Length: 499
Image (tube, rainbow, N blue to C red; front, side, top):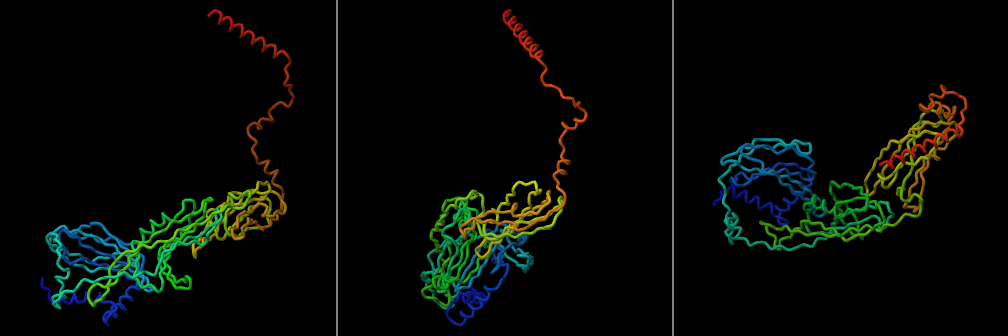
């Protein structure tokens, strides 16, 4: 088919965009392209202007260098029916620079031939309003699938007509990637209940020359987590939402670290934790042996990187009467009390705050000894957990309500104390209250007895005779009982004999 000057000019422009690493035009294009990638952008793109009745028309929403969190529905178009959506996510890093792109494509099926007008519409994406101009497309009769032949794919290339010759297909060669995948832990041996942080990350050397991109990362991470997570551990997931590169030095060599997954694990028993080898599939591009001004200078390929297996030893806690009940971590105590000088019967509030690094969720309330000196009520509990910098820290607060019953001076440490195991010191430790209460006033024991209802049995005491009565009634009662039993036996014998 003959192409006019405008179509030929469009083809020239498209070909010029593929120019890489040679010529002034190519350098300018690369510079503009790099600046474009670093900017956050949300855009809507239409498919082809002309489609057959049995072909799909598309509208694609693309978010670059920003996470696609939410978006409003694609428009309803007269003459087109929605036929499902598809999505794609790509993350690439070249020479330490990382870019990301996430796309959602809405497919439409034409219901008739002819001209279909798509009016202007708006979509709300990540809280921003994106406007799209209208478009007119032409729908032709159903297209018949053409059979492939062995002719050159460039037989209808305008450049072939323009230059009067055919180009030879490019040959591509593999470029070795200076990168690796690693699963690491901050501890190689822990006690039962002691936390350790596990990190799965991809490392790219600053000397890397291979162009790499993450591939279908969301699905891969879901499968990876299932392989990594031990069944015998409590998990605190760091929930990495945005994968960004961080400079790091390994064996005096500079790398960029991309954390894919990170969590703190707390073993529930003495079974050792064994992490298998994990695979991560990436897109890696082959490069043309003889780059040309026009044409493809790279070819998409795949490579899977594997981590090494990892094992963490788990050991028993030292002997202690409460070793199966205590929490493990590095904790401190913070207290708060509403008053230290009280009268009997006067209430007070007391907060016992355990703060530090460890499994905050597993911390139990202090066990208060039984006492008649105070009335202590079950506490309200509140916890705050922070997961950052590879550590799990937080606070667990137990808020008590108490009433003193007896006057005197009291050390709250005799009632409020909490035992835990410190893995850094490898010893048991106790957080004990340092508050001192001074209670004045009358004892509430008599008040307590008077306020207690002894029940209906005692309510009729004042109406009863106060004379003593002997429980022994003499031998008459016993004789009567014996005669009655003998008569019953005789009657039973007579009845049995007659029968």
